[in-house]
Length: 235
Ligand SMILES: *Cc1c(COP(=O)(O)O)cnc(C)c1O
Image (cartoon, rainbow, N blue to C red; front, side, top):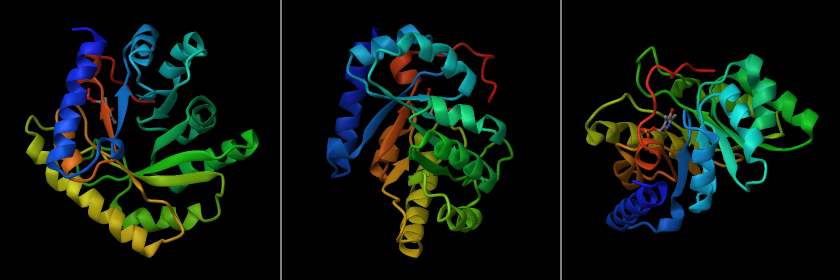
């Protein structure tokens, strides 16, 4: 299957999910997750009309980006970021969707100030107690939000989460609903911030995520096919 065919099928599924949720297609952005696929795959996706991409690793994207400077695309970091790579990430990405600590926020802000630009961010929230998952526990969100008030170059746009992996999409539904409720609560408590974005939903569960209010679905496999295994190291 070509990328364009995959895109067409995914678009149909997005439309169906939007209809069943009483939402319009323009409320949900499609992010193509191109991690572990070569720069040529990004180019093909861009030619098919995709404008928003997600990558997991700073180094990996830096390697591909050089060949793609002519493309008018937005690329967000969706993988875990260590503070010591914050400057490089702020330089390389349009936005960072995985901010999960005060220290990381401070480092990204320092870099954004140096570059004299605002950096859009999402706060990554960890909703399951699994050790392997990154993200900020909901009861610590306040610490980060209080600090963000003093970091004006970081533009909070909302929340992001990755639920525990499961074959069954319905398993993810309570996590998606929980993220939405957390967002509603934080938006009430911190009216000075923008919480409009909810980044949730991947290839296996994006229809459920759309039903639960996702504004950005992150789709890798359903668009690009399977990734080579064994290359999943984080930043
Ligand atoms: C890899 C990845 C995705 C895409 O996963 P697929 O199941 O291939 O669609 C989405 N979000 C994050 C954070 C990822 O690491």
